[in-house]
Length: 248
Figure 1 (tube, one colour):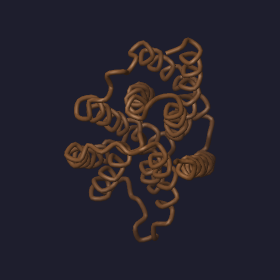
Figure 2 (cartoon, helix red, strand yellow):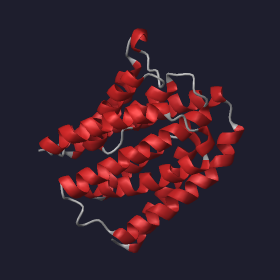
Figure 3 (tube, one colour):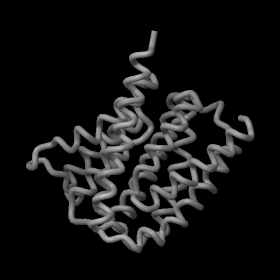
């Protein structure tokens, strides 16, 4: 990989980790879009997994006192169920399909009836959302929009959402790395020097974001999270649709 490309990725990874460090989300959405533009999809998935494991792991450590452990076990069970299913299918979608699925998902979740409103403290919902989120992660690279809506639907405060989601995402991205590395076996071309840079940049961006999250209120956090997800998701729908229309 060219030095200028590595430098560009380092800046992007620090910035997206900073964004995720504030909201616990959205940074992964931006990062996977950049990686999909620069790398083949399987390699982009693997590098994204390494980066996000570092970012979420460091974020979970920084906010460890605020982790709510009950949803993690249920979501982890859903992750395992989805891994079993997709390890049998081993299907890797094309880039336009991945981008469209990534962008459409958060809008679909917002259309759910009030009776099906997400509850992070429900084991049944945790299992269901975990299965759906891991399926989305293995197909698109991220599950953030779905997991975001799940945690925003309950009574958790901003620190609990960021900390608990980070712990869940460690499991999710580790599962994705196993899928694309061991099962699909398409990470041979991954540059581990770049992966090391990604880990350091993720930790830096996450650390810089902590003070800003502390200064926010829960109302501000939820308002800006909704706006951010809508903007980024809308971009992916447009980009994926353009690629699909331009395909021969």
